[in-house]
Image (tube, rainbow over all chains, first blue to last red):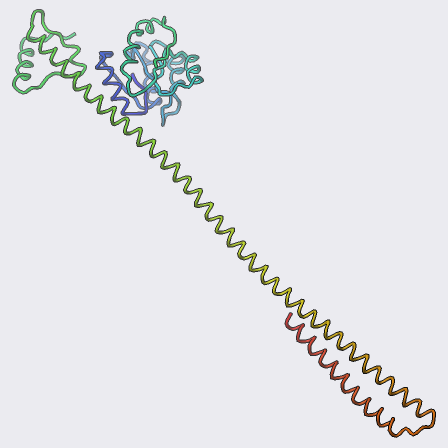
Length: 140
Length: 198
């Protein structure tokens, strides 16, 4: 799942994931409120509902009630914490990275025109993320 | 994974051959060729190649649009910035014009004040001159009056002929009084006129 306010990036990300054979299904949401509503529905009301294996959240989601870091905090602390989750953003702000780490983000992917090599690298570490073994990593 | 039936397999291959229509998207990843079916394996491989190629093309175009979008947004921000600066400059120009007008008004007021002061000074010096003339005239009048009166009084007390000095005194006194009133009248007139002007 991708939560990002930039619709064009949804297409870029979906195509990149497909080319790299990263995922069978992909869902893109353009606001954290929309994602919040979905997660609320899945947890605690329907904990057995199939939920995304991995969630990529943009740092600044324009037009949403809260930013990506708050979204991660909610998913990790309020909605069950059982998916690989991290930030995908063009920002490299150290303070924000620290904030993201504190709320349980597992990775930080720097968004740029050439996203595929970073996603490939991320895929290599993915299994460790699933079992919560991999340390926090920034993909530059 | 989905195993394809014989009929579906044949239809898919025929559609691909005749109409060049291939399966695409993530659904393709779920399809599996029956064991040993080389033709269908080749077909799935071709489908995947076509799908990847289409996605790559779309990705390139999307990236270009994204980049152009970013440039446009940056230019828009730059424009907004320039517009804001222009607005500030316009405000400053307006303020400067207003200040200039204010200064002009003040200068005009100053000029008027200076002209009034100048007029007042001229009037004051005129008054001072008139005052001096009047003072001298009054001294002369009073002096002549006193001298003539003394001479007349001496002539009267000493028993001298007073005919000439008497008529002189009388004439002199008449003339002096007439002149004195004329001077006083002139002064009053000038004073009245100057008070009216101011």
